[in-house]
Image 1 (cartoon, helix red, strand yellow):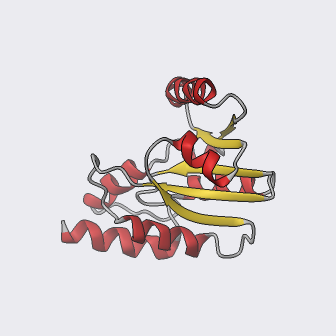
Image 2 (cartoon, rainbow, N blue to C red; image 1 turned 45 degrees about the vertical axis):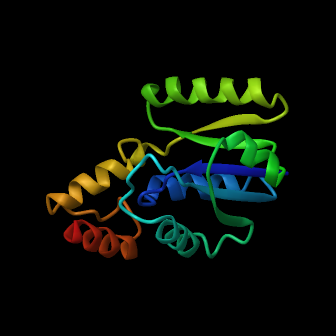
Length: 159
């Protein structure tokens, strides 16, 4: 079975990695799909986000990292994915994710969305929070992989 875990991953956090590791155990191939959205101004380029994700998933043989744009459901169909994994941190995530899952179901009824509840130690964590903490010189230890800390700090300093 092929599955996809989409996101912007700007930057990848330990919460993302937790979901990737757990989802990879449940499927034959997991595509980690990095969103390219021309209307957003990400901190990291698509190529940088892909490279960071490839590094953190290099020890998971059934994970593939690719960019995508457009409708997620079209990308899922293109790669043959029948499952979309989404992480939930809080009830507020559920409302948005439910709306997206129902829209995807309407567009392509044979693709299922599976929600994975975040590990409680990452339930507060988001890429936006990581960037905000870095902006004010806070300690990112435990929020992102160690090698990502220096990447985030360098990006924030260049802004």
